[in-house]
Length: 488
Image (cartoon, rainbow, N blue to C red; front, side):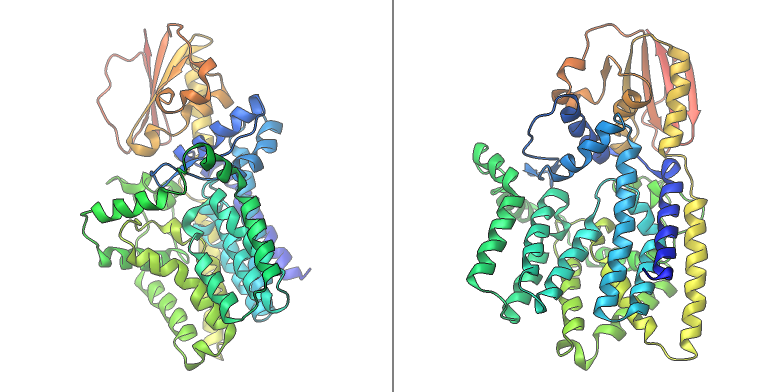
């Protein structure tokens, strides 16, 4: 293996894993997933679906649940395990970016692209979150499988498998099927055997969802109808400027995030919708550089004669067009996760093609990019990470000792259902009741107790306090949280 890519991989792994404990946050998504994993850890049984998506009774497949299961079982429900796996998947993605960039163009492009992806602070923050996980990797694998069909039709089998995984991981990649259809039809690489085998592979991959739909009157199959109906009834104004602003902001933030800010403010939607959130705004010099890179790559006469360029253009459109034009899609940055590795490959190609003296300026800016982004991650505000939560839980348990307690959460959507019950279960012991019982008690019916608690614990996100607390026995503050302990 090339020594430079090995160095990039080591640096990418170190930055992600060393800072994980202090930066990994626990949102409703992570808790929902791990609660389901916990059910099969306690009593292994077949599950046919994963988490609910879209809010239209559409369920994802259980693939990610099964993948996490052995690790969660071995490490006894420790929440950081999911973050370690997600971070390591990010490191694998760095290598795949290198391989694809090298395959498309040359080693220099592969190295630059992997350097950008591996050490962008924004990408690192996303890679440290267990959900949505593996989206960039899955996007790359589908891109690679389509490109490689020029060498063998059998690569379509990988595309079929990966596209099936889309329904297990994240629907932001669902439109890539149209890039696949265009590519195979325009290159006339289909035959009956390839179609049959690819279809079988796809159906096997989504087979748990097929079984679920069979017994639930096509709940998932009819979800698109409900989505379209919702769009039709949606009277909200389509704000083009907001969507353009969101995408230009993303094109800036992949290169630069402000120092000292919390990653919860940077990447967690809708956690970062409060007035107290301090998300890094667009830096227009970086926006212009990104737009220049895209324009200089795509807006040339060879766009539709250069097969590689045409492919990257079509693949990119599958992310950009729906993001900008579909009113029901919120301008949420993580819908572009599958586009970012492609963007970095394009950026690397443009930079590698620069002549003197511009190439010297580019390498100087790359040096600044590396120093700033690595430093940004290490000095990020850790007020909302697992380490902070673990300390808070320890301090609370020192007050209540072995007495029974109930637990509730306050402070916005994310911290109102942020899996504190799971964290108390992992780091201390299970409460007799919790505010999460309303949504998830069906996952732990034997753990909801009628025992009268001696203490009531209320966890509050300091950024969005919901009410004034009075009459509490003890107040504990740690990082971005307050814990109010009431004695009954």
